Length: 92
Image (tube, rainbow, N blue to C red; front, top):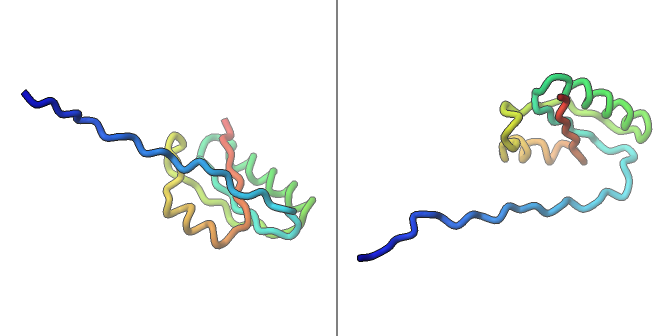
């Protein structure tokens, strides 16, 4: 009798943090909503406060379709060259 393990080893997620920014002065802010109630309001207010304090630009908000799942890699890849940092919120 031959035993076979049907499981696949789990991949280790890449959970490295991005390097800290030296300053937020004049940087471009990306906004990522999870589409939950009030997430857009929380993100907009936070971005307005950051822009008032540090200047810079706020990009139009983008949303992911499923609040329970990570943002699709393609969405993040498209955002990364456009913004210096990204904020996200769960506005429950």
